[in-house]
Length: 323
Length: 264
Image 1 (cartoon, rainbow over the protein chains, first blue to last red):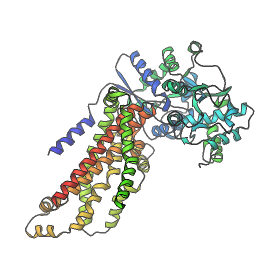
Image 2 (image 1 turned 90 degrees about the horizontal axis):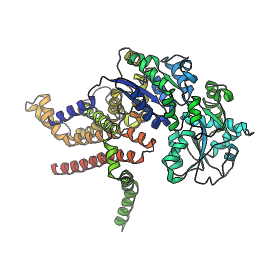
Image 3 (image 1 turned 120 degrees about the vertical axis):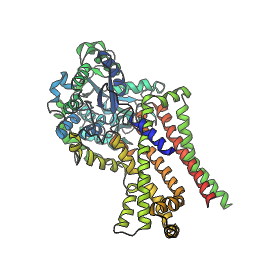
Image 4 (image 1 turned 180 degrees about the vertical axis):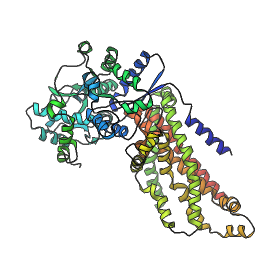
């Protein structure tokens, strides 16, 4: 009888009181956690009624997979357009033309791929060509599982080509010598920082800034290569899901907020490059100007990049054999 | 000489692979002081995660208790077609990788799965919500009670039960007054194992959870999230809660074994 009462008590605890306030759910990728803590709070302050924004973070591809299988996302804010395309294609929860509904093709912030190196840059890494040297060990995550790592791969490919190297041989040498391929971007950052493996971590620029700040005692340094990729993590409302959850208007307002002066400044504070020209000027001293190419220019879009490089039997499968 | 060597090897092994990591967890958790520790374990998202873990266990374990008893009794006392298949099925969750378990539920309850569209039309959430987490927990804890009971019931035989029946007891009375008291320690042991497994489950739950902070994160998932946020102290602080439940389980087990020996 006593046990029964305990169980009953726990059950009622678990169910909790259902609140009536507006709940928005943002399904995002790994590296936006810190930014959304601040952005969500600022957005909630612009509304009249109370709103609670629930966050789910994980590898971009895994998150897309979950939304396709029914994870109730009002908005998705993922690492690459390909993942949102997949949601549109496989589940029909949002229209294929999702890119045209927001400014800038639904990309509120951009970033790029940089090199994170150890104090004093002991290996003297300056550009892509240095990563081919036998004495330089490069860490990156597995592009099969991590959206961030796909950007790394494509940045390396395009960067090598523009540096006059053979891109295929370059990425092959990179992955052949990688001591470990973590499943996610944060995982490989932890390997580099906590376990002290590798000389260079290929990283999103915002992640590199964050790691440099979080682990100030390690004196990590950021090296910007002469040319890199323009990383464009997009956002979209998952229409059918938001309609059903009765959050469509709020979801749209939430994404619009990303493109306001306030939203852009918050992004920049978390080291994402803003897209509004005025805020870009305001933050010019944080983000060095480097030459950038886009996935569309270099690879003919994400579908093509995926088909050629990451799909089963693609270039990555050909060059990478796990040891 | 032999004894000393064996003891030394055992102690070294346990120290290296058990005590040291355990000490490391507590060390890391407290490295930035009790204040940080306390804040990490009382933060709303952490509390929600712990509560969800307790809740999933509180639903899954009693259900498995009933199922395990029924299945063990059926297997030990009756001969029926498909009996050995049933025994194999009970063992299945031990053989299947937890991630595969999660994917199985996705194939059935996911929006692209068999029942997904039907559930969607009726507004019922299973995966990426609490029911999915409970289902996954039930699946991974299913074998423990039955596996503890079956050998014991078979070993004890049915003489006592037959005697009870001859003396006029009904089936329910026999079960309650004869069978149950005979197996109660094994039963409790099975429950303890189930609880431990339910608390610690990561893989299966990770697939069906959706990782919604404050809603579908269990304690193990919350630890992973904190770790990924570079919040190592917080991650280890919540990990100490799981480590403490594990130590509690060990203590309960030791107490139980002591009681059992007394009873014999």
